[in-house]
Length: 169
Image (cartoon, rainbow, N blue to C red):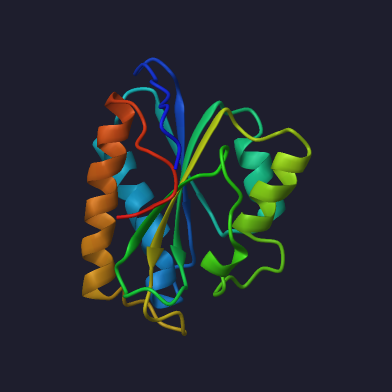
């Protein structure tokens, strides 16, 4: 666990990347969070949506200094569990993204960017444990509630210093 924290002024532009697929049920949660933040029109915040394909993610964040990425994860945790990872400070476990439809997804994009020394100065990943990743367009209630909690945490981060390292919230 990291004890020092970085503070960012509101004037530091932030890129929010919502990752997901609308037609794989809980996999859409990253898109939902991004859309809520975009609707709030937060100053100095840009919002984009991505499918989770690694090369596209690397291209999206290549000019950004501060990035917050939100995606569904698939672990042994209870549905709705929220993970927060400071990707520029610690490796990303590919086990978090087991449900990815891409061979080269978010975890691999982070680690390749790290190896190439091309990570943004700050890259925070919020992973929300999903329960259903099959075909459909229904996000479960527990995952939707977790999405609201992540929106609140991101808004707090945009105005304050970052929390400690990898945390299960």
